[in-house]
Amino acid sequence: MKLHDTSTIQRGTIFIRLAVGLIFLTQGILKHSDAHMGVDRFTRIGFPHPASTAHFVGGFEIVCGLLV
Image (cartoon, rainbow, N blue to C red; front, side, top):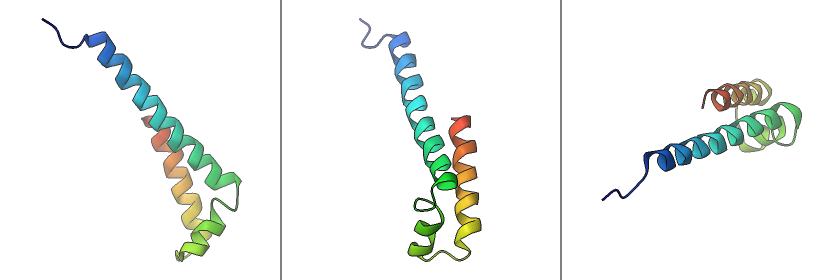
């Protein structure tokens, strides 16, 4: 007796990867395009060099979102 069908598990895995990848991708794009989500947010948190840090983190999130 099979508990799970392998195609169902594969579809679930693909769905989760797409969801996580899209979240990373959209958040990375927002850090680049919206100052409130990027530079201003990193300034308010207290990061050193908030402009370069926000752009680095945004770029990293875009790359990782595409890789996922």
